[in-house]
Length: 257
Ligand SMILES: NC(=O)c1ccc[n+]([C@@H]2O[C@H](COP(=O)([O-])OP(=O)(O)OC[C@H]3O[C@@H](n4cnc5c(N)ncnc54)[C@H](OP(=O)(O)O)[C@@H]3O)[C@@H](O)[C@H]2O)c1
Image (cartoon, rainbow, N blue to C red; front, side, top):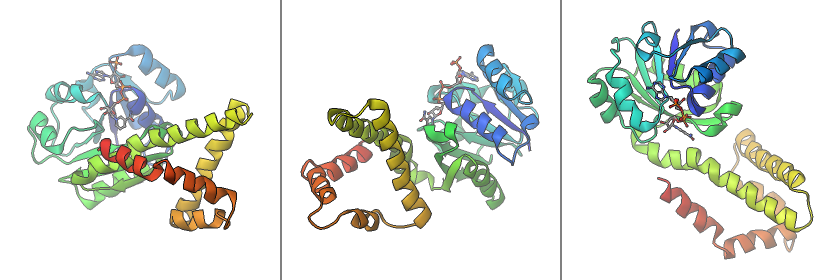
C-alpha cells in the first residue's frame, strides 16, 4: 500500500514519522511532498527509506492513499492541480473543510474520501484521531482505523459530529495543558521548582487518563476514591466548583465548536 502525504509540516511530518514507526505501511512506500527542501531532507535524514518530492503531481502518481496535510486555505489550490484516479483514497486533515467542499474542489463526487482530525500528541504516537468517511467501504474504514490506532487511538465519527468532537480532542488538549500550567503555578507558589512541579502534574494527568482508559470507569468513581469525607481533596474540589470550574470547561468546549 503506497501512501503520499502532501505537506510535511507539524501534522504531515508527524503522520509520516508515525507511519514509518508503525507496522502497516512499508517505509519505502511512503512519499512526502512539500515545497521546502530542508524540511523534506530533515525527514529523510531520520527515515532514509521515505521518498521525498517537491512536486505534488508526481508524488501522487502511484499512491493508493493520499493524505492532504496543508493549511485549510491551501486545500483548494492543491487539489485543483491533482488528477486523482478512481481507486485512490483521499484523506484530508484540514480542519473545517467539509466533504461537500472536497467534492467541489476535486469535482469527484464518487471518490472515497476521509476527513481526519488528529491532535498534536500524534508526534508522541498518543493522538486522539477522529475519522469521518465518505463513499468508503468497511475495509477502507478499518484500514484507516488500524493505521491511526498505531499513532494513539482512532475513532470513526459522523461528519456532523466532527466540530463537537474536535473541540473535545484537538482543542481539548490545549485545555489539559492549561490545567497543567495552572497547577504548576500553584506548586511554584507553594515553594516547588517549576521543573519538578511540571513532571509531578504531567504524570498525574497521565495517571488520571490511564485510570479512565484502562479501567473503562467513570471519572466520578475515580474521584470518589480520592475524596475522604472531611478530607483535603473534597475541599479543593468544592473550591473548583465555587470558582465555576465545570461551567468554564463546558463553555470553553462549546466556544471551540
Ligand atoms: N495543529 C493541529 O492541532 C491540527 C489538528 C488537526 C488538523 N490540523 C490541520 O492540519 C493541517 C496542517 O496543519 P499544520 O499545523 O501541520 O501546518 P504546517 O505546519 O504549516 O504544515 C503545512 C505544510 O504544508 C506545506 N505546504 C504549503 N504549500 C504546499 C503545497 N502547495 N504543496 C505541498 N505542501 C505545501 C508547508 O510548507 P511551507 O511551510 O514551506 O509553506 C508546510 O510544511 C491544517 O489544515 C490543519 O487544519 C491541525
